[in-house]
Length: 596
Ligand code: GDP
Ligand code: MG
Image (cartoon, rainbow, N blue to C red):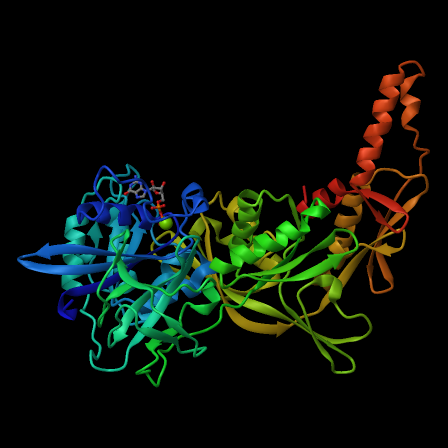
């Protein structure tokens, strides 16, 4: 294809502003999906994506579009909008020359609208502002067109108005893309360089790698080389998605398509890497490859200990399609055998645990999410701690914690509430700006450890759902953090250890000891429950002793009922975990960790 008629663009938006729905209408309007085959969120292929209405993986589609006698080739890349997947968003952007900045005409600009816009500007993309959902009765396109014009410059009249639902304005939008998005430029005679912007695992085809050709070309059966690892693979199939995969005779400058090599693991074909050929390799990789770094860690334990091998297998399987997933075996006194799993963020954590439950039928306990701490002891040894129970004992010289730059957008009436919440989470106000008359952006630096601890839930509930949040890493800082242990009859229960700021240690201790007091049944002896920092006890409760006698309730008589009760008790015992001499039902751990 002649690069002059290629237009590569993506759609960027805050979650729920209608990217996937608009993508559907474009597929229909350009005729690549017939009305009969159309289904909602056509490109969201995973069950979880469809049910939750969110996009997790990017998708690319090639669509023909003719304007005034010229046949264009449009490549649309639908991106995930969520903070956890920012790296994927930024790789998708790097594969494009233009971006549709989509904004819900009833909501206006939100936190991820800004975050994505900044990413697009860093990649020098032509930006086309679009108001979506103009069919909604609550839509106020005049107001938000002005808001968008203020943000990106230009006049409100330049803002397109569409409805992904009804299809209104979609043709005009496609025409605008051909006008405003520049054609790709690259050297057709140079050694091949293709950027990987997505890599997915397919049970039938193995890993499918989505690329954008920058220089040169690739053709079927060529030997390709990954520039980061130097690994060479044979190209079994090369093609384009339209939106179903269609093998082609190759990819040339500016084209977007897929490669299949028979590798079985997405780590061998990483997002951001450069693909070249092994007989005429490029010397310099394209910029932008970074390994996704896990930011949030949690221990995952099967409720039924015999499920451990299934959990291991399930994680191995998910890893094939998720290069960002990290895990290693871990054992807990309280919870048995499990894994410490690293995630990109909270949504990533939620998606993985949900897939484990659903696709592998596993019942799991997840420990409270933790971040990475760098702990230096007095003898200058540095420990990297992702599990609070591994916090070093003895004298601590310093603790460093990750910090994020958070942007919160909300109507101005909520400014006070939001400031209060952010301050209670050790946030520092960096700046505040009005986006229009009544909407404000607040920028904070906040420890990530405070955000993973139900920050988003509090933000939503205190603002009636009106606030939106986006954050990005901004390094780390020293903080006065301590480990609080929870002890049952003097024995530490590792799953409940937490790393918290010294000012919040007491509150955490009181909360957990009270919670456990209510959850753990009385035993034959008194059981003290304590919270401690090192050897110092900071909170204490106790469970009084009883003489447990199940048969006492039965008033003699009914023998079969007695037997049933005894059996029931035996069964219940199997689900008990011993912490020292104390029997704790597994349910108590689950309830204490889930916090309700
Ligand atoms: P995404 O998260 O940006 O991909 O958003 P979706 O395409 O999944 O849309 C989010 C929600 O908005 C869904 O319930 C859609 O049905 C709805 N929606 C999307 N576009 C429109 C539109 O133009 N009009 C109306 N009324 N609803 C829309
Ligand atoms: Mg979507």
